[in-house]
Image (tube, rainbow, N blue to C red; front, side, top):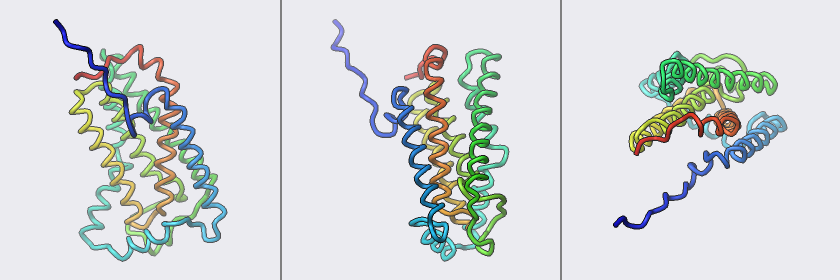
Length: 233
């Protein structure tokens, strides 16, 4: 005789935000927050918001040659070939045939590139200056908000989380999600530490990535349910 069936635990916290039914709300809230943040920056008398100057000053006061070298290595991983390879691989792994793997890898890459395009348009419209050039500890170009490294790494990490949730064993998927998100956070924080971005640029990049992935996920959720097998237990 079989025992009673135990219903799976309801998703909580961050997992609930990424449930299909919640995706439009997640995207909407992220869009509102990044809009309010941008407005606060634009109306500020000195172009900064709470925390920007304090974190910038702290970073300048806590630099060492070793720490800067490590930060440069980490920050370079945010816009080198790695985010694109990671993103393509994430999409590739969700396919069930060779043709579908190539299609999904290319589609994931297109999502990343489109998100970068949205970020570039927003950056050009906001036209926020970077922190003083004399404070930079690495090369930077263009305007400051939203951060390009932050947006790119967050999008790549989000796509990895999407892929491993659908293809990997639950324990492995959890480890890979933590690794991907941890890498993206480290990339973002190095932009503050190296003096090329304000903290609010980082927050704007995160919010933009969340909004883009959430809205796109909401549109594609019905298709995903029909074509992607559940993750292994």
